[in-house]
Length: 366
Image (tube, rainbow, N blue to C red; front, top):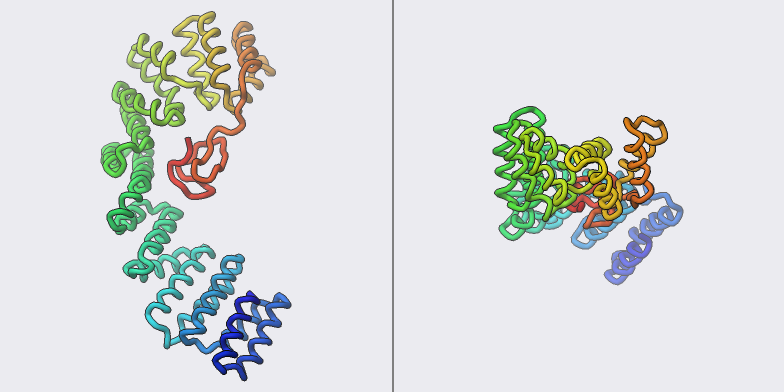
């Protein structure tokens, strides 16, 4: 900050405008050096008549305070700037955009929204405001508003926004499925796939919708396309796929699924369903061989390993040979502490997120 103010002071000296300003400059700089930013702000606000030259300094000071996390001070500077009557339209828009960012960072989303809306038709700030509004609507889970605002993007930007819009439709569909509004959920998923035909989440939810309606064959058909493109998502429906085959009395289909498609589930309850299906389909001896081979190749999630350790220690297993099987599994398995990694920022997590909590990317966990 001191460097910024010094450059400004040199410029004022060169222009001959330095008498009262020099006194205020050194007074303000003294406050800065003594870490008294509030007093420094008061001095500079009073000392700097806002013209085409001082606007830049106001904006730079405000931006600096915001980057340092001192949002209240940034807000004061930008509010003071906007209140000045002699700004050009470009300067006014820049100040409004800076203030909108102050409000957003402070969590004052309604105020930030109003300012972003005011500027959303500006040629200069249009894209930034659309993205700012989208971020607000995401936080508030106003998915329909998020869809509408992203549709304001121009064609090339709109194409880039399509995967996000598909996820917003999936959020709406999930709420509708939870509320048993199946016909509406079907429409929302159709909209998601029209935005992004390769949206794996929409395919997953489409299968869930069929499953809840007892349309088990259609559910399986939906989920079968997940394994090649998105094995992490296919893993989420292993237990439900097993249920589908059983309710269809399709033993041969279940055997083929277990051998060729089903990966080892990452959740303890789903693992138990998978393990029991392996035993039912192939018999204990063959199932043990297959399970141990799979465990050596695929490993176990931390959740499943912890479950098996607890079961073995508490001797809650129904048969001694099964207990020995699970002990063998634990001996051979590589246990993963991290199940999912964001492809955007490298954030590691044990749970699958559609929206990265670290960098904000959608559909970045594989």
